[in-house]
Image 1 (cartoon, rainbow over the protein chains, first blue to last red):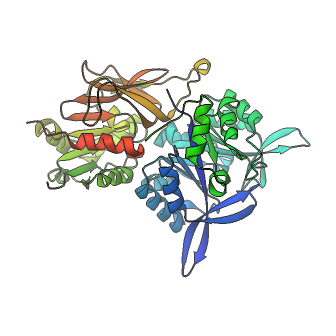
Image 2 (image 1 turned 90 degrees about the vertical axis):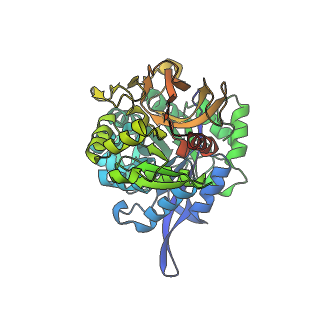
Image 3 (image 1 turned 90 degrees about the horizontal axis):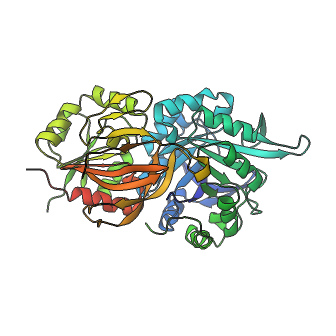
Length: 264
Length: 211
């Protein structure tokens, strides 16, 4: 039986250290306040030892991938020093970006704003690399005035003019192999996942949905799987800053009767 | 014992870097096979593959490496491991985006997996799923059930009788591991399957050339 996935999310930003620019690990709150954490490679190795099922790496600078040497080098090192599935996104705008990231060791590539701007990028990528390689990442916020959950791009600062369930359905129909769904208002807050939107999107698409944004306790993962029907739950801050790790979370999820991988 | 040299077929399809790293981590030497002559120094070969079947098949043909691989595997009997689409390419044919002929080395056909909302089956089949070993293979015993990492929408069924080593179930049964003589093929990604994946690669490296 297919296991549900616990997925640490590594947010990456570039910083100048000495003479070199390096890709470092950060966490965010509401996609806005950024705090430095440290070295993404050593953190990834810890996650691997703690039996994380997969890693998602998102470059939040969103510089063009093709010229982003520190990021590409970091991905290459990450892929050579860990033996786990690796999804990479942030700043991906064209098919060549997919090829470049896959060559450096990514297994899956996530697209966000570029897919909203030109949905044909999803189908073209799926045709060339296979749907299983294409993750459409969707950030959303609640619009209180319109009573709608709206798709946001550019670090959730720009309204993309679409409703979240509708966009998820169109992305899946275009050939997305997975949907990574993040509630920007809950990002980094620990108040719990947006189960209602997660459930609505899971019901609207036939592809796996990874739910993210708001995990604060292990029970939030259980809720994401059981209530929202997510196949994966991703978290950044939860694993970075709290006295929680994927192993402990796994035990809690297991106790709730959810199928999950127990050993390597 | 001198280190084994594993040739990884470099036909510009997919993530060969991870395969190289996995091979080296179990103590073997990895070598990219980019020219036909590159297979000479290799004791084992790996055929990776990511993407649509037709796209990969065309790339493999155009690479000009196929005659050298056939010579090494079918004539000289060197062990070959096909991974993901690299496995599917060895079937008789695939139904992905039209009908495409395969190499026919392990038999069977590659057909789509289907989603089933009522049973919670989503496609692509992404994540860790258990493979049931119907036969022993190297470090794996018959009857053992082991989680490996999958990421695919199409899968092999109908492999020749007795050649199916491991099965998986996602909406329907499919072949997760097939072995025919010196040819081994797996649908999952051993190079991404942590400890279980390394055991699989070690089991492959323990395979001897056919006399």
